[in-house]
Length: 239
Image (cartoon, rainbow, N blue to C red; front, side, top):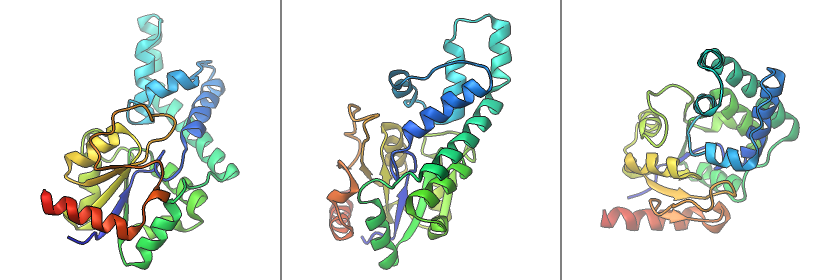
């Protein structure tokens, strides 16, 4: 069965963005006089939780503070997250985060072959647009036939909701699409929706169990569209 669309996660998949996210969180904390510090080790653990807003809320529940203070902090989650989003966009736009190796070529080849493209990400639409423009070039957001992102679904990854929404936007069944992810939660979400899934872990999650994916690669440089078509067809034949 021919592939008709490629569906990409954003953070970690299209570009290695997590260090920029971590720095943006910490800058937001300072700006809002919170003085929390999410170091690399803590942030690696927090990445097991999908969604920046959800990570902030989780962190608040772990703090040794009074219940009055905890309630005050809970009321500030949206403000903290919006401040972080603004800072993150500034970082992405100023430093032009590059796409991960192989991403631009695969997307270019897919476009040339008439394949559809989609995004399925838990990050905000503002973050998606900023990253696409920085990593793939201004206007790249318009290459994608549908963008499912942010808080538009009830449940974030590992729930399959965001992939269900992306497929609805593409008007295609899961069997004709391939998903690209970098996290265990993302792989679980894509597989739960019945998608052939390619995982390209980053340094933030390289030790996690990616056995749920049909294909695990160091980067998308390791595969081309023709190889992907063959692997997808073989998987569909044995499904």
